[in-house]
Length: 286
Image (tube, rainbow, N blue to C red):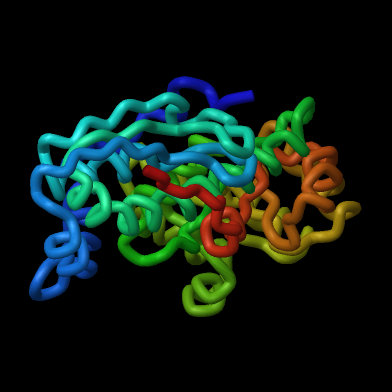
């Protein structure tokens, strides 16, 4: 099964090309790819294939294509399995043709994006499959590698998951330390309501059902249930029904996620899908 078409629309190239250019510059250093430049004649052409060495959900081909074409605009990059597709071990993802030296120069940077992003998509897809048939949606968090958030969140979408807020500026989220510093949930919510525009949603993180009731009483849009037991989640769903959207977080694994979803929560957030997803083994072979 593949992710829905709309999920796999990549970020604008304008946003991601500078990151990939910087990665190439880091790898090329001060003298460029001295191995490929000296060992391979300029007129040698080659065709290579990007192939999955293990099964998984694919994400990041857009990054690989940009990497190869930034090194050499004459390179052709033909995609066989687009981002959001499920690949079996041995499946060819894309075929790349052009000067052999150029392909070798771009290879590592391309794979450095493709493997980890596909790993995130693969883990996300597994969580999504585990909650199939419930109303719960799998979402990511801000626990991303600095500089790679837009791409990691894209990989989550390729896995069939949904995105949480992208940063501190697109939604308000009152966490435990905010509650402590503001003087309570009610005080924090009142200040936010007084200053935010009408389009901005407010989420409150709670640890107890008492805090949940306070957040509901003061009009939180979304409430995050932080490391609650399954019984408390079920009680929270009953208390919040029709009043606020509920998100569960904490101890989300492939073994626990189904039971969490069956409590009736609306969203389940996982930091692991971006900060701890295993790299999907993908190789490039001439």
